[in-house]
Image (tube, rainbow, N blue to C red):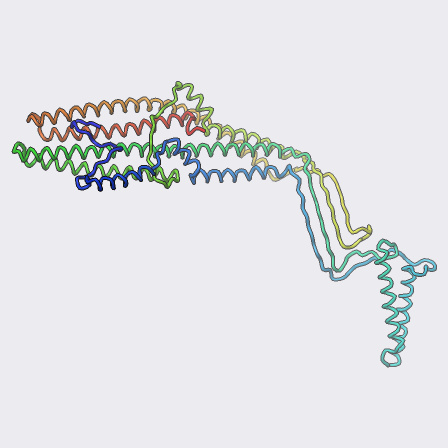
Amino acid sequence: MRRGDGNVHPTPATMYYPAPMRTPLAVCAALLAVAVPAFAQRQLTLDEAIGIARQRSRDLRANRERRNQVRADLDRAWAPLLPTVSLQGKYTLNNQEVTLSTTAPTGTPQPGSLADLSSRLAAAQGQLQADTLADLYQGRAPSDAVLTDVAAVQQAADAAQQFCKKHPGSSECAIVIQKRNQVDFVASAQLPLVVPFAYHGLRAARLTLEAQDANNQTAESLLLLQVATAFYLAAGNDEVVVARKHGIEVARQTLDNARARLDAGVANRVDVTRAEQAVVRAEQAERESEDGAAAAYRTLATLCQLREPFKVKPGEPSSPPEPDEALIARGLTLRPEVLALRRSIAALDDAILSAKLRWAPSLSAFGLFRAFNSAGFAGNPYAWALGLQVDWLVYDAGLHSAQQRQSESVQIETGLRLEQQRDVIADEIVTARRAVGTRRQAVETARREVALTDETLTLVRVQRDAGTATQLDLLVAQDQLINAEVNLARARIELGLSAVQLRRAAGLFPGS
């Protein structure tokens, strides 16, 4: 592109090679070295940067996890309305087994019945006792008669036990109240039927989750606004680097002219020294601008979690064409901050009503099933029961009243914040609209300034060659041109950022 010196200067798409590299082999090698990274380098637009940040940003992923935490409150709100089922298995080792006999022998027992077997057992025990006492009186060891009696007692007891095993439901057998090795299994279930407070509590939890979604959108828009800011800073710094490189070229050309004039005897050594100082300042300014560009690119890469090489490709910033009143109405409808506050107020309405309804009775159904390894009085190793249950909280030491008052206070606070947010949105839109107009005019002014300073530099060079302008005039003119180019780059940055801020204020950023 042509500048005020009348020469063609390199742009970001052109490269300059020193004289030692201008052999055919060196030029080919340089072209290959430059072409490969340029081909691999990604051209990144603002929309692409926003899309990548949405997918990869750690902050946004953390916000999604925070939503899952709020989701747990919704799951807890379902608990009073859903059935509960519990199972229990238990083994107990008791110190003794407890039985109860419910029959008494009447009349002559039937042969083979438990009464007959019990009579035989009693007779055998009586005979064993008599024979044992006889042996004790005579001071001798247990006789054969005692041993026979012991066998008879054991045989009668075994026969009675076998009878009860074969006839577990017989009324003649003893009832086992407690087994020594006791096994129990219990299954219980409860089904809520009418729980007045839980319905509004569930709705409040749903609205709270929706409010969290809106808060996540607010956090997302703020983060993506940082992405847009870093994007335009990177683009602007690229232009500043180009301007600084051009400043070096202009300063070097001035130095070359000063040296030539010194050799011709029409200039003094001071002019050359001043030209050299201008080159040094221009080179330092270039290094600082490159550092700024590298920092902007690193910030953008970190926000987007983008590790591959890329180059920003800014487009022409656009702003909504609607008038301020339409944008304010749109912002009050679309801004996630407003949506979050509205949903929070609605959630608090249900939370307050839920706290009031906790004084109402609740109705539920229940069921119980139990299995065990002893028949007990019923003669069955299991039992079950069904029923209805009414719960009515009469006094809770003021807990629910305190919760209700707290919710009412939070609701008033949230309502005030919503009113304040509406005024803030209106102010942001009006201010951003004016800023966009001012920045757009600033860009046109900076372009005009670049053109004027370019013409001025050309005229001063001509005057310097004619001897009607000084070396200082030339240096001032070239500094003004470079400053104008830098101001143009900065004006473009500010215009892009103002356009993004206006879109966000109206709820149109970042979009779907």
